[in-house]
Amino acid sequence: MDTLENHQFKLIARPKGMVKRSDFEFASAPAGEPDAGELLVKVQYLSLDPAMRGWMNEGKSYIAPVGLGDVMRSRGVGQVMASNDPSVAQGDHVVGMTGVQEYAVMKARDATKVDPRVAPLPRFLGALGVPGLTAYFGLMDIGRPKPGETVVVSAAAGAVGAVVCQIARAQGCRVVGIAGGAAKCEYLNSELGCDAAIDYKSETVLAALTRQCPKGIDIYFDNVGGEILDAALALLARKARVIICGAISQYNNLSAIQGPANYLSLLNNHARMEGFVVYDYAAQYADGMQALAGWVTAGKLKAREDILQGLETFPDTLQKLFRGENFGKLVLKVAD
Ligand code: NAP
Image 1: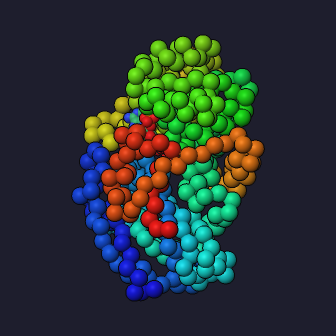
Image 2 (image 1 turned 180 degrees about the vertical axis):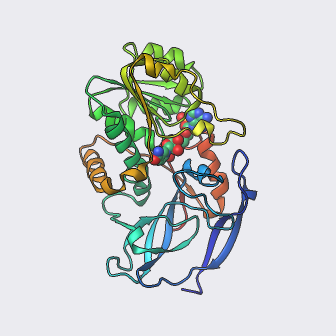
Image 3 (image 1 turned 90 degrees about the vertical axis):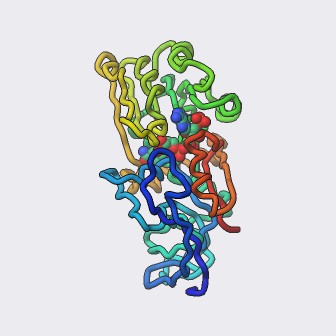
């Protein structure tokens, strides 16, 4: 395997604002050999996530930053080419932190086996992967939806948001999705079963939410932060739950992050705002996967991936997330 050439992206500069190609080195190294307890995995699909932007920053977070000179961190799915662990066989498919590269040597205990007969491989990076689990635990454990409640979701046509919308519908909630553009709003209404969709690029979100949530917002699942969070805060119902999942509108901010001006609504409405990281729920992933798979089988959970081609496009493809150019879970195909 030492003869296999492994192309990879290494982080060589901390980005200022949007990531650029010059923040990375496109390097090549031998693929390497798995030691005892390790696997050599051929990466087939990489998950491109908003969180990658935060992983490139210096400073304290829920996970250590990617070191300068290190292969960029990424989740991926691929096929095992060689195994030095009895729990995984050559030919199995696994999901894990492969990094942005063609081949990954990883510990078998850090890899999760997946079955491509159950779902196409990219889905294990989306609705049946970390984004699906994020939606499930954030909504069910922190939001605790009850039938008849009004749930508002931002970045609602994205990987996490689309699953939140559908789980909330399955709980008997009234669901209002917020997304950028007419095509995504049409998808929310006609495919995901949302009761209403708001195009934040063509409507004033506060006015639209006021119209669509006459009894106020019981749960706001926030993926974007900024002005949309503030608009939702202004309309909370009594005992509302605001779930801080992410704040993509702020990730490339070069100045101070925009905080919520309307936070006193939490006091006035006896409401709660709580952030979470999906990794907190690692011990319960199997339960989450079972629930998600159940909804898929019952036809209550649709999924969509936006698959682009070619490892070498990684920096440019990642930018699409921050411009809203992905429609569904953004995945980079690396190999067949
Ligand atoms: P995604 O929604 O599939 O893609 C990102 C979407 O964000 C874009 O398609 C775009 O959709 C929207 N967006 C980008 N810039 C925006 C802006 N300035 N204002 C409003 N919307 C903007 O991504 P995802 O993987 O599902 O992640 C969604 C959020 O969940 C992110 O904030 C991410 O960090 C967070 N997350 C958190 C956890 C956790 O453990 N807490 C785990 C996974 C993900 P539009 O076209 O609709 O604008």
